[in-house]
Amino acid sequence: MTEEMAARQVTDAWRRIEAWLREHAPVTHAALGPGASAEEIAAVEAALGVAVPAELRTLWGLVSGGNVCGGGFWLDNRSLMRLDDVIEVYRRKMEFQAETEQEYATPGVPGEEDIVVWQRPWIPVFSFGEEDTVLGTYLDSASGLMWHWSKYEYLLPDGTKPQHSMVTYLEEIADSLETPALATGGTPGLLDGRLVWLDSSLDEDEQRRWRPLA
Image 1: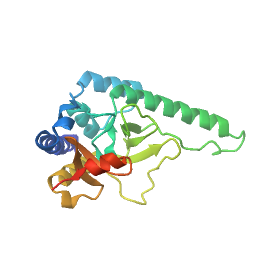
Image 2 (image 1 turned 120 degrees about the vertical axis):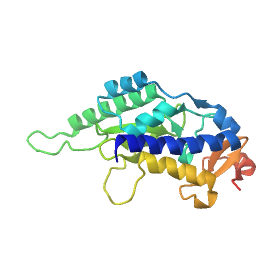
Image 3 (image 1 turned 180 degrees about the horizontal axis):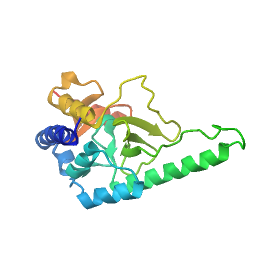
Image 4 (image 1 turned 30 degrees about the vertical axis):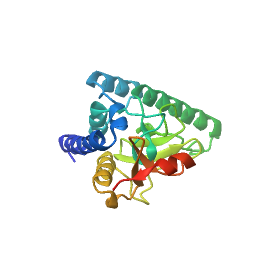
């Protein structure tokens, strides 16, 4: 896929999501942050030392943030991380990787330090809340696929199950909002004017007030 095609597909999918939010979830739509500038995205690339794929550059250029009452509206109610948090989480993870390699390295035994905590191509993108940096989703810039991480588990690209690209991730959200019967990654609904995906993170009162999309 060319960069131009990827950028166009991300833009088209986001415009569908944004239009739906404007019409049906005004609280979520009002919380959307402006897109990042080319200079801000370049600063992320410089800090990470990793080229940001066209799909992610495009998304960041269209929207940033968008958290409502501490929650996000992306799949699994995740939040789009702020660029400063992307840099900080990446820095912490790479430092932890270096510390882990040093701790487990056995002199004279090749490969003993090969314990993966984080890899250089991985760019954190989504988290479970504006202030949360221990659970989230990263984009593997080498493969273009998205995977989850947590404080306790790192899902590595192993080829055993299909994963989202940024394009398919956004298209799934757009399809699920426009045609709820197509939703496979969660059940979208509305709670006090905001988009919320039904899951165990909702308390009993929120579950009573939550309404599935028609």
